[in-house]
Length: 257
Image (cartoon, rainbow, N blue to C red; front, side, top):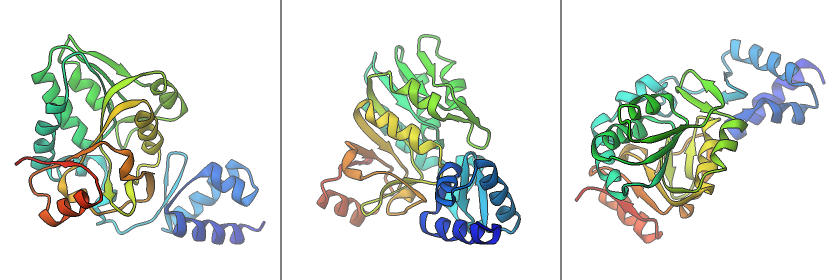
């Protein structure tokens, strides 16, 4: 297949899927991974996509809040994230095994856990969370291992997911980039998706922690329907009509009264 034809197919596929792994493109185009990587490099230089670890995402407007880098998201809606964290820790009991995936909201939860609890086992793929939890010497903290994503300060990949698959987790506090009744949980972080899905598959009580700005928005990659989640914890700014609509769909939400 000629390079120009491959580029056209990659563009068309990305417009449809929003995000794609290099291995998927190699199969689709019947070429090697190295050929796909060269094609993605050329298309990135043209401004048509953004390469990420293991694949590419569709180039979006730089002002799209769902695609801001970690350091920008960390300060966005900080008070709401702290409100979510304060409420979410009320679901936790001493001695439990907890999973926290990578994200700015779970970082705020980690800060509160260090202050409020004495004995927990906490599994995470986030290096910043690891650093925070290290302040409590009584915690049993488990880092997953895997490939390092320097933009998100997280670990990902098959090794990461394999480690997670061996644990029986009491409660998972999961942060995502977007959630909606129609699309469920979605995220633009292509490698975080597999991590989240593995955590959910090993967890008794599945909780999404999301500030109110993330409701009824969607991102590139689907994680799972909202019916697979036991509870969504959010802040007091969630509009009443959205809370009502979620209730009508039997989707449980919890926010400060």
